[in-house]
Image (tube, rainbow, N blue to C red; front, side):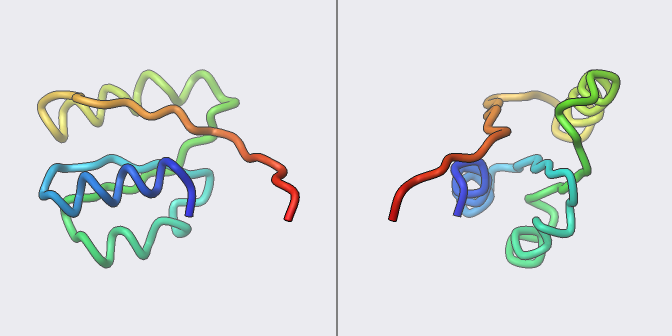
Length: 80
């Protein structure tokens, strides 16, 4: 489980709405299935700067405010 997924799921589990993004939002289907309308999954490729502003605007409109932003676009190679 990734850091962003854990934080988003934790917020939704406390009935706080969470916006979740991934290049392929179907990867987030389990969060949407588990928490329903508390999680909104949207496609985002962070390498495309044209997508960032509209996404933030749509989140603001959907939730009325943004409390926390987690920028966790990456991965780590951890030895076994």
